[in-house]
Amino acid sequence: MTATTETERAPSSSGGRFGELSRWWNARSRPQQWGLLVPVAAIIYLLPVLNPPIITTEPATSFPIALFNAAVFALIAIGLNVVIGQAGLLDLGYVGFFAIGAYSAAVLSSPDSELGVRFPWLVIVPIAMVITMISGVILGTPTLRLRGDYLAIVTLGFGEIVRLLADNIDPLRGNRGFQDIARPGGTYPDGSPIFTQNDAQGFYWLAVTIVIIVLFLMGNLERSRVGRAWIAVREDEDAAELTGVPTYKFKIWAFAIGAAVGGLSGTLFAAQVGFVNNQRFDVTTSILYLAAVVLGGQGNKVGVVVGAFLVSYIPDRFQFEPEYRFLVFGLALIILMIFRPQGILGMRQHLLTYGRQAYQKLFGAGTGVAPTSLTPSSRPAGEPAEAVPDDRSGSRPQGGGE
Image 1 (cartoon, rainbow, N blue to C red):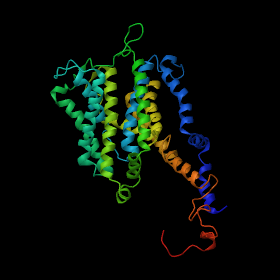
Image 2 (cartoon, rainbow, N blue to C red):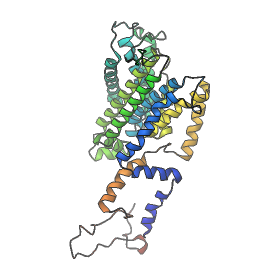
Image 3 (cartoon, helix red, strand yellow):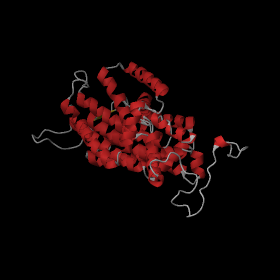
Image 4 (cartoon, helix red, strand yellow):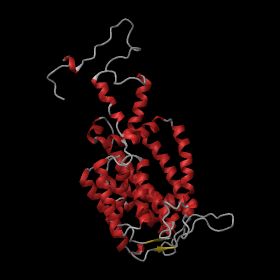
């Protein structure tokens, strides 16, 4: 076995039990993975009914409401992950899209709105998503030529602009807000409504269903040409541009799609709470969204769901004071960056799985290193095998820089 082979195989033995579990999961086919996830999804749906005593947040906080808040947080993190994790664009003002979705639902359905209309919630959802997508394009068109800290400052300013507009534009009612916002219809067999402000169980089921649908769509998008272009932009934008990837167009798409998911989560939140004002869309809330993505693992859609659940659920479970919430997650992020900088569920190994499977199909599962010449099956009969330079024997050309 060559030194190169030993070097290639060494990392695969690291990672402990978590690494073994990750490799076992990646080795399963997609139907097998979906089959294993079905009972997990069933348990998630039954959580508000089971109300397990170990994880319940009662009596301080209603357990269905805590679960609903975590599900909405997860939906927000999935949308932000498109921008930060997939395309590599640092967005500190994502709360602005969430606010636009919530205010769109309020303006289109509340009796306090000056428009004087009351659309059903199912009609409001696509309208709000289109409005937030347009907002994402408007924000991204002049700013996405910026990079790094400059882009982060601009997006932070966008979030503050949305909050200040809600404060100062009279039709948006400032601190007075909007009441009696439309919510989904439907009743139980006994005639009682499924979606109410006091009982969030129906809203939780709806939110989990939306999260599963969005995860499925994002998974398909991740494996598409658009997803591969986002990853190229994230890894090296200049190299992606040189290889023919229209980076600016795909960054606009990332902002638009991420904004649409943020608007969807805003309409869901507004429907359950039934009241929207300017107090829930500050910068600190946006930083918590970012913390969820970093904690779970940038670029891993399942990881950001886990991170969002932790960021939303832990304060409800242990009843932190608001000022201590940021202290706890700040310490958690510091510890995580020291011991696991890729987050709870990193993305790199997940992406390499597809390449490894394709490589094994082409060259055989037992091959240790990538071939540097023709394979035995493709080399013409009678032609001698091509010698592979070995660094240890001194046959590698010298003098070239690496």
